[in-house]
Amino acid sequence: MQFIVSRLLFATLFGVTLASGCAGSTELDDDRDAALTKAIQSGMATAEIPGMLVGIWKDGSRPYVRAFGVRDKTTAQPMDTDLQMRIGSVTKTFTVMTMLQLVDENVINLDAPISEYLPSLAIKNGDRITMRMLAGMRSGLGSYTNIIFDNLPADKDKAYTPLQVAEMGIEMPTQFEPNAKFDYSNTNTILIGMAIEAKTGKKLETQIQERFAGPLKLTHTTLPIPDSLASPRSTGYTVIKGVEYDATTWNGSWGWGAGSMNSTLEEMKTWTESFVRGDRLSAATLVERNKFTDAPDEGVGVTYGLGIENDNGWLGHTGNIPGYITFAFRLPSERTTMVFMMNRSYKLQEMSAMLKEVTKIISPNNLWPDPPPQEN
Image (cartoon, rainbow, N blue to C red; front, side, top):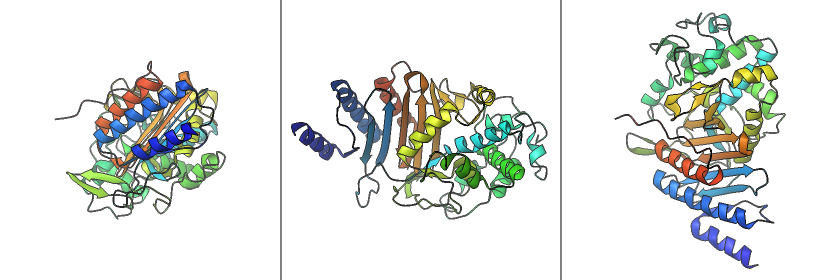
């Protein structure tokens, strides 16, 4: 009884919601959990994050599943591990995996040019930019989201079609010759999604449901059309030019197959583990997906494959959309999965520093990489 009372008192004092299923804890797990909670709460304070969902699962250890802080700063209602959140660019993992399955089905060729699949679009270098380059962020096409972000929050309620945002991106100046280097561009993944629909005659959201969400029983993981975030959900906060906004209901249709999906903590765990293993891909295609190249803009030493990041051994993807940030990663060498879902998108440097402190505790041989230097 004393143990239960102590844990409840700890949760009350420190604003932590503890998940059930913690019976049979070990002293080692208790020490780890206390260190994690301290590091996370310190990181939240530094990064000014109102609320956060955290899940860390390691084979042989007790799961660490927590809801920290509040879902809404006005009501002070606490976060809950079942809340739905926007997952931003983690959406790319679903879109690229759909493309890779179509590679296995001989519907799409990794080394075919995008112009073969979208001949009606006037894509600069479209006859030289391959599907592989798009998935690996090596096309040289500009990212249309730079335009979107420049017009927020004024255009927060504006709805976009995939074609509209694709045209924004391909009308921008190219950054470099195809395959010359890495540059993260959301235009790439939008074009992949459009190619998928053109070759299959089936909507991208339907493909994702039939190929992944359905088989994995991801009942709250969706690419909603029209864009929305279902309840129960967390409020999402973002800061633009020094002003904080509630971005929960902002129209995120501009993200589509590059960033418009929603999910929950437990479902992100299920998806991340399946995704990193490469379930439902052939061995040969999995090898192609996991050919990583330098991605310095994503962090010191970070590399990028086809829709998948490698952050010092942590495989997965980061998602950042106004109001929400998600980190969904698996460290295969340590059989450890880590998912963070935050309800504020702003201080990425500070969030990365928090993840480094967390990995010092759970994977000291695989620390989270330092972020790229901030531009002056």
